[in-house]
Length: 146
Ligand SMILES: [Cu+2]
Figure 1 (cartoon, helix red, strand yellow):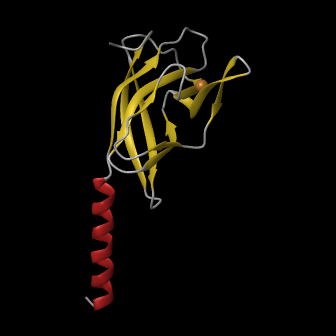
Figure 2 (spheres, rainbow, N blue to C red):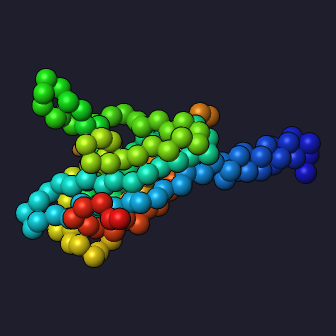
Figure 3 (cartoon, rainbow, N blue to C red):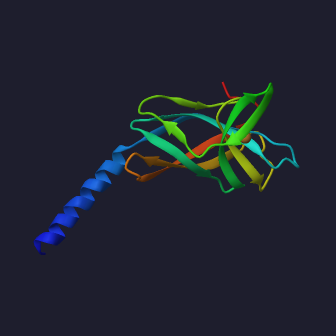
């Protein structure tokens, strides 16, 4: 092995280590149950990251699309819209909840029944642009589980 190959190997090991140190902890995840013909619902959870990351996308095999949404009062009307990314400052819990940020699961492929579970994949980007994926198992419920 020449010196150059050794240097590249050492660099790649360092990068792998720094990626695995980033961690987003998800607690209290749940998805609102749907009725038969309903095509969209919300997913909620609390997120805390040990370094600055941005939630850039989400997906689930039971939904055609999952968007990060924000809910806000505009001219006395509650509206929601997609946001490009949700920032998670290091060690500051961010809550996705009814009436605020949430994951909008759209183009649902089946009815979400109470007692089942939805799997959601969250994709984060850190300040260096590295991607990190977190898998969430969210119980389906009518209201936020206690
Ligand atoms: Cu929404």
